[in-house]
Length: 178
Image (cartoon, rainbow, N blue to C red):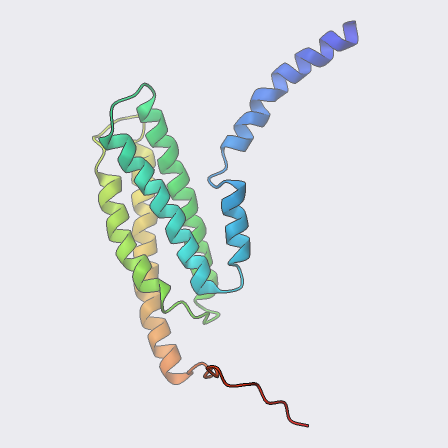
């Protein structure tokens, strides 16, 4: 009986920490899986990140414009932290893909226009000490993404002019020499 009581007390002290670790993740398991699926095509991966950041920014907008609910400021804070975490992860990916000359020419203009949209949404909530620091960090992440995307657009434009990718055959059967 005593061992069971000790075990129960141990579980009660550990459980909140385990729960907090799970909630600290910025992405769900399904989102992580989507990123894994898009890992081989840089363009697709950037588009998946844009989708996740759009979802987070829409959640922030809904929280700020919707009916006021208890804990709203804490929810905004959490969404801003998730947004920052995902934006930083995207920025890390861009830092890796750029020097490797991974083709992101289709996704980068979309990323650049999305940064304007996100900055506007992140600036919309009224000042509140609960999330002001998180908002500042999120806006810095958006600024970093905008700068990286702008630079990469130019870098990729120059690179692919001098190093054009091989043309893909469209509908033509692949001939194998014998």
